[in-house]
Amino acid sequence: MTKSAPDNQPVSINGRMGEPWVHLEDGHALANWGKDEEIAYNQMNRQTEKAIFFRRTFDFLTDSRVKGDYFEFGSHRCRTFRMALTEARKHNVQDMHFWAFDSFEGLPELKHASSLEIWKKGALKTAVDDFMRMVNEHGIYTDRVHTVKGYYSDSLTAELHKSFSDQKKKASLITVDCDLYESAIPVFKFIDEFLQEGSVIYMDDLFAGFKGTPLKGIARAFLEYQQKTKWRFIRHLDVGWWGRSYLAYEAKEPVTGIL
Ligand SMILES: C[S@@+](CC[C@H](N)C(=O)[O-])C[C@H]1O[C@@H](n2cnc3c(N)ncnc32)[C@H](O)[C@@H]1O
Image (cartoon, rainbow, N blue to C red):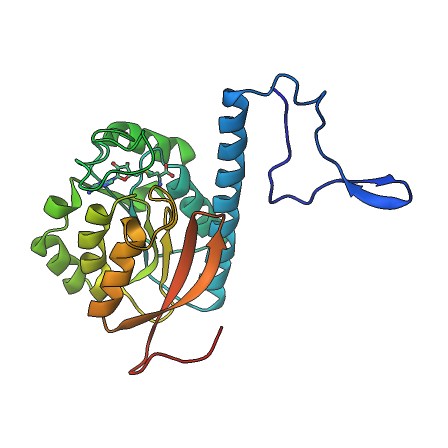
């Protein structure tokens, strides 16, 4: 397979005709480039962007003294969950608990067709034992990892909410990586009480799955949530072309002006 540098790494520059030219693979280098290479290339670039996001965000959280748990809605193959664990460890975060909320059965029935053929009921399934095996192999803060199994409409119960509330839980970082509007609706309802000033909400797939329209998917759920909550959100980090993080803050009126 032809190897390329991830697109968020510094590009290498060659001198040519007295000018700096970016090194690019040419027709010879890409002669055998096919679909497998394209998929691996996209995955490499996307996972690299996400790893950089987690590094920056844990730096933000520790620098800003925002403390609380990690909630991940959509844990699948543990890729982003491992990033959270590693960055928490590298930032010497001592008291964080790490919550993986997932059906562990894959996607539910889709209410709105996605432009991605692979998003179907049961797709993206990782069984809870396989997920925990990956967590244990990773070997960071394993005693503080918790799984909550089930579709969110069933698993995010009033009892679970009360239990978190009684423990005065707060979230410092919330990853919403559950792809679908109908999945994100109960998620936003559940997290509301556990936000604090500086909580980060990272929405993966804000622009994926529905051609970027804000009328569908996670984007629609987030817009609707903003109509109901006391929390306001300021845009923080862009993560590739697909995702973005926001910081929660409280204010009676929306702040005007461009940031
Ligand atoms: C794109 S994958 C998550 C990828 C993961 N963050 C990673 O890095 O490997 C989406 C996950 O969301 C879960 N999911 C989607 N909708 C759900 C729902 N309504 N209830 C529970 N889990 C859901 C799926 O089971 C799947 O594991």
